[in-house]
Length: 145
Image 1 (tube, rainbow, N blue to C red):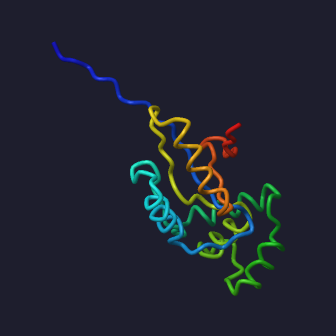
Image 2 (cartoon, rainbow, N blue to C red; image 1 turned 90 degrees about the vertical axis):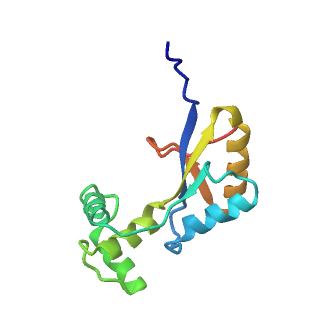
């Protein structure tokens, strides 16, 4: 008879920058290295690079259509940043969306046997850096009472 082993439960979150910031594209990876040095396991906090993609232009156009960002605000942002004011420019769209909404910096995978203590530690290390841990489906900030 084959023995079936149960996969351990892992709670998944994202770490996001706050709106109003322009961070280096490699910031998520650098942040992960910093947290690893402070005792956060490498398989728990996985840093992400920021790579502009056509989805950024699509998301910007959706945000403009939905009234979340005006075309005028986008163009002013581009003028101040020295970027191409075309909403279809992936780099301009990427930077504008980051400034308006923040961006994902890392995936956070907390094993059940370390929950909630490890999550509390991670939140405590990120809060002074103005970074929030959010639920990946709702984007609501995780608050530990």
